Length: 46
Image (cartoon, rainbow, N blue to C red; front, top):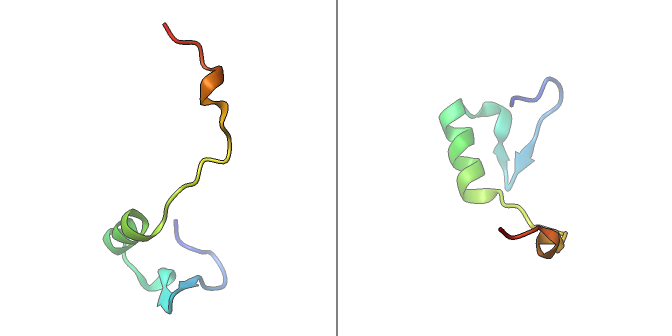
């Protein structure tokens, strides 16, 4: 995804200046997810 207005900078890096491959690597190396829900215990096991 590319911003449609404004700019996004993370640690001085402009994401709007990156190509698709560079953005993919950025997401892989710098972006993570934290699961805030401990709902996995509610899933039924088969």
